Image 1: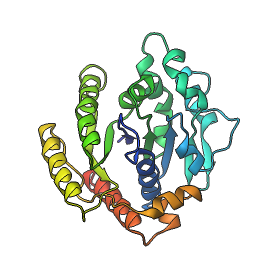
Image 2: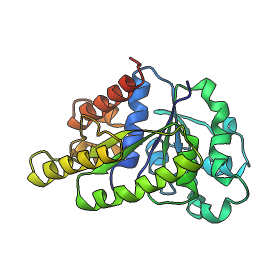
Image 3: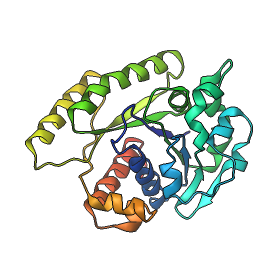
Length: 254
């Protein structure tokens, strides 16, 4: 079965790229060959993975100017289709009939070679996010336990609903992942309960294990490492590995 997971949120600062990296790295540690795809013009995932410049990128795939086999980089942390700074202008560059399906068409030949594709997406609604949602079969929504993230959730579900209705009926939301969570504050606990109730209204669940606030996450980014390599005993490492196990359990995999 084809397994492609997008990490999505139309709000920045919620741990989207951190989650994409940790999920892909964790799946690899569990023995599942994983390909990262970086659609975020900020390029943080590509930077952390040590991507080489001057190669074909995710934008080349969407524009049809490169084949996926020429865009894949083999980095020390996993295989990657890197970002391009020009992704910031994708809404003007990507045009024509079927433009929302360009990524889906480009990555089709990768499935026989990988167990999972993990897509990091831009934190705003545009042609790149729509391409990602149309291309994948599953999505995870990282969400910080704060009021602004909660308010943005309804907008995100409106986008997901529209794409699922008109372009990708196979799309499944695996769940909402609480990030930068601090169980010691009443506000975080109260908002977590509210987010759980809101998720039920949309027919979605919240993952059992929230990702606790942890300084090791930012340190790992500085040293261009995934959290499991940098701080295997940290709370973040334990929490993200719990996420990986939960994703695999949902799909009946060890």
